[in-house]
Image 1 (cartoon, rainbow, N blue to C red):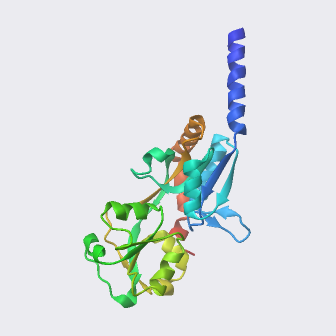
Image 2: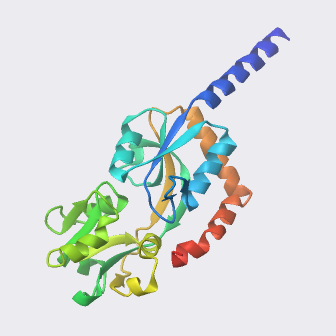
Image 3: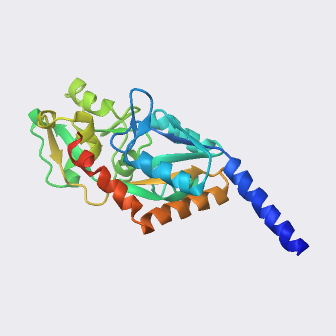
Length: 253
């Protein structure tokens, strides 16, 4: 009986230690998936999913919103840090502990309508200069597809600046690679959408957003988060959250 009692005490202390361990969850402002309100409150589809995952796993946490490049470096280098919404790619596989996929979205090239650019297939895009964000999955994707930085690939540090650069440098930047749902939310207006042409020529790349944690985060915590996420899939609460945000994903309103 003494051994059993001691074992129960050890388990209780281990559970308490993990619960007491605090995780910094880093992300960026990326409506409709993560939305930083004017009062600094954080919401959005992915945020609600991640918040529920941590709640079910009973792990202390807080959110930090910054530019993606800053959040990404934190998640790579620091201990007890998790990041979302991040795309799982081969070049990132060994950099993180992967909790699981939380949602996904489609991706397209966009150009100013006034430029009358026509893309019949993906290869047609190579003749144009494309702007992407540094360390985004779209950046790595185009590099893997043979685009060359400072030749036909221009890299920015701010996702919101992609559309601005189409205007400011229309003589040298022709296309941007954008998540369709995010663009709808950024523009938030059908009339503004008419200013751009959408080129749906990408068939092998989607924004499959995941939750991941730094290598210096306890594997036990990562497993608890993964179990919590799986439980959300099994009881359909993940599907319900996606349904709740469906109108925002489509209209941006």
